[in-house]
View 1 (cartoon, helix red, strand yellow):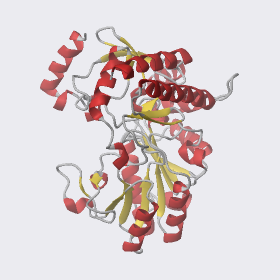
View 2 (tube, helix red, strand yellow):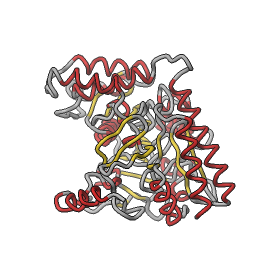
View 3 (tube, one colour):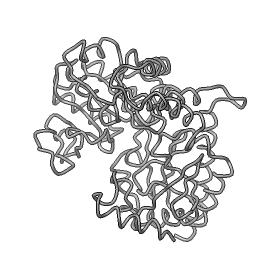
View 4 (tube, one colour):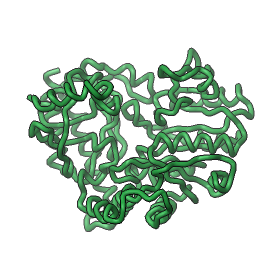
Length: 430
């Protein structure tokens, strides 16, 4: 029972739309009301009623070292002693930029923002300014922030211009956005053929994590790189979620692909609001004040966010006696994937457990999930029961069938085993 959370939620409903400051925090997709947290440490969160939960949301990705990591807390405290914001260049901005450029070879220069949404919006504006073209290809199921021109769903066919996916967005704002299915080579070829010399670029989550989680088919990212080069368009990797999570250099490091522009967020802020976009010098130098593409932000390069992000990246890439932290994340991810698949098989429940390193998603579907259309075949009613069963067992998963889960270095093998054991019991009861 969570009486204190229920009371807080009733109060929140009076002053905050839906009682939450981001829709994904609501429990609309699973039923019931969200709980309120007042403490997080390591791989656990504690709600206001004192319930302890193993957390696989990890503030939606940034907490790759776990919550309240001592080095991040110390870095933020030290930075705050000198002021919370300047609106003037500060040395930490340079240190962060240098770290990003060193860790991601495709990035020669980088511009900080305050959110991943800003980063994606700015990268697209820059791609249009660089190519002097208007149209952008995106993929259904990929989310690039709540930018008007990117909140789009596919029309009746692969080449149909997108219709707004939200009220308040004029159709004219999305007329230059083309939506195609992920992992579909022919749809991308057809889009370029139908819009010759008009496409500025492709924006893609290299491992889509906003419709659950599904992976690119072998050769698909290589195909996107090849066709954009051939057609004079830019390839933009939205690595707000995957950046520094799947590998030191992000998904592009894992798959050995060099995009023209990269969008980052989450981990580079250590839990504080942040975003960034970067790429080749010749493209980035088109940004104001050097070039004609305008982009700005009062809190961009905020010293607290920079301090937290630097501490996060330095610790994540530090040497350990037992190998790299990425090796640990891979090990824990493999342990969870193997255990969950065996549990589903034993319970005779159709589950597609997709995983990539420390990211995962369990779809209640009988067919493999490679794109949004496949994901939509998942049994959402069964997921609701599974979600609440896990929550009641002390394990917090994202409150939606269509969100990825995250493992941190603070999770232990015992945490994973407890998660698998709880899941096995609940699956048998479904």
